[in-house]
Length: 302
Image 1: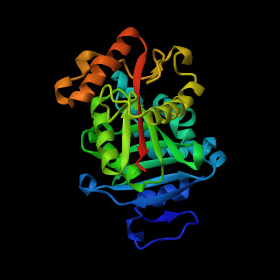
Image 2: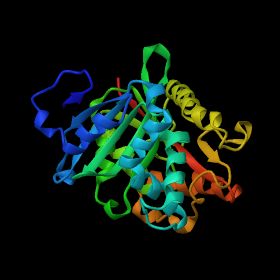
Image 3: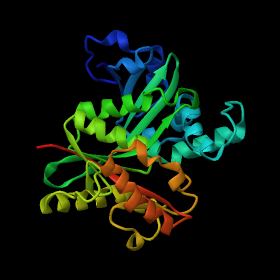
Image 4: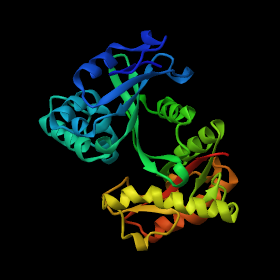
């Protein structure tokens, strides 16, 4: 791993790509570290951005520089959810909308960003924000996960999540999802890297298995930590109306609501299929206009 902006260099200095060099010289308030990549990204490179100066990072001129590197990936993460047009860097309206996402969304509040690049172009990233936990434990909340349209279903998102888990820097990795493939990936990567994962409050996503009383109490606390940034951002339904195992975004604030037609239960393990069939989908059906996500918590095994 190699760092820039004041940190010592390692023997892997040759992995510091021209793209990373350009980011170092034009984007303020951060460090960049090169990351090893697995077979799925053998022809690409990955690196981690760590925000070191929040004021400099969120400076308007800095956000514009960041847009030049992350603009297409950011745009496609949001616009094409609704079947929007392809990214056009010459389109002033798209530039303004993308800049607004960067300055008001997960990127502006992130502490770390894991990035995948193909040559001189960013093609995917995930964002994380640190969260304080009891007993001096370290945690992070996963934010935006974005991969360019033409690079989806090629293992890039999985590889970036694997880098996050493999570092082992966090005692708990918190997030939410309603996408079966993403949940299966999180369960597998957690197990591979020494984490135990709960989905919708169920251990390993298996319906009915909430673990011991002590485990339930800890998962309840971590669930509240997961929900806090969403509630603070005022994008959820009233907190007292949200069932314990879910984050529910108001109409228009999240992806379109998931339906039974979107989930092939036969492709899921029995326990996870039951969690969708008996817990998440019925909750979504009670709130057809809002978007229901299951809380997804991975905690490091003792």
